[in-house]
Image 1 (cartoon, helix red, strand yellow):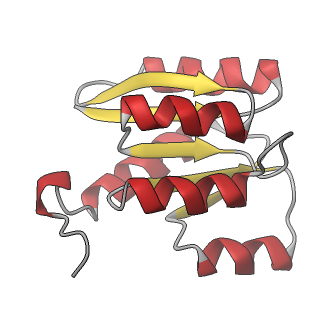
Image 2 (tube, rainbow, N blue to C red):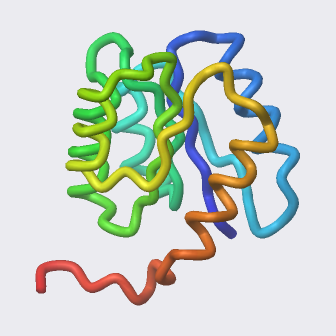
Image 3 (cartoon, one colour):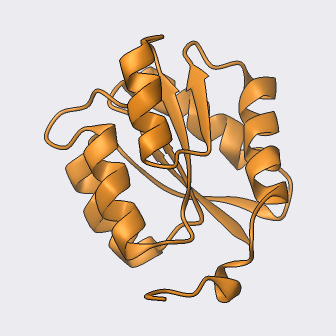
Length: 133
């Protein structure tokens, strides 16, 4: 199963994204959600998801810091940023962190599904990731 974790501070947006993910067919599975980056990081340490869907601007730990910390723990992690900001600086930072997709809010379900399917098609299985080489 491809485990997907959602991080979004706005409840209605988070519920909408969760609904999209929960309705994806196998091999995709919703594994958890958080309203801020700090909470997400502690939950992700336990759940070890394959895909992170995250906002950028959030309380306590923003999306960029979350990505940095999460990727250090989970080198296989694929990341899709969901942002309300179409700013070049954000896109540059996302590229520097190796983000797989950058989607602008409001998120259209078809766009999110396509982004998830695209990054999984490009993915090396988690078992094949070699750490520390």
